[in-house]
Length: 250
Image 1: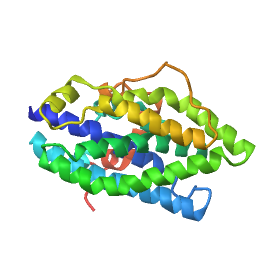
Image 2: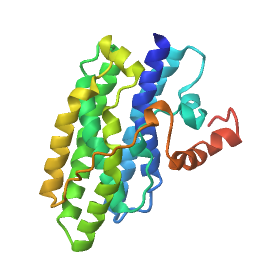
Image 3: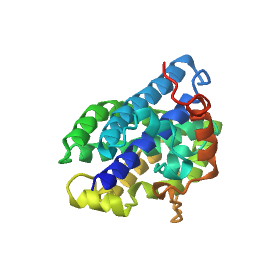
Image 4: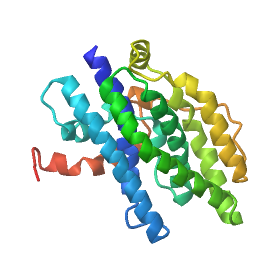
């Protein structure tokens, strides 16, 4: 059971780690100083949440590994994040759309995780949801601002929504380990979040004059360790220091 709980925690935490790394790549490259700092702060929020998850995961695993080992020294196929969060920073429209599509899910997920009978996960959720509520407000505002802005900003947001939409359904896909955690009252039954998610996302997109995609084709695999070509390049950057200087300490 500990191994299942360990993998369940990774499935939650890896989303925040990879998205945090993506946002970290933008430090110093935002469209304005205020937005640049905001994106960096969101990245730091996600890394803070990740640290709590990985500290707990290291205790569960019981192999003497640190949070840094879990974060930095796994091969690509052992990362269990959804495909959405590993998509590249194509432009600012893609960055905000990716953020918004994940933030909406993340907020709904943490609302339910607060009801977990695992006291540690419950505590992490209660702390994290305060930060994620801001993340959602920030990304939603940018979707509306760009979607209902100039013709170019509208077109760029529409293109980003069309391209990233195919990764949203995976957010609600449950692995066998997820189902075990749900049946034990530890995990969140993400299937019950799906309708609320798409209704809430659609409401924001419509208010931003963005057309909601009708495509029924979706991609998945990240939760099983099968990723897009983008994750390998991201990990090579993120893991460089730990792999170049093993057992380094500050």
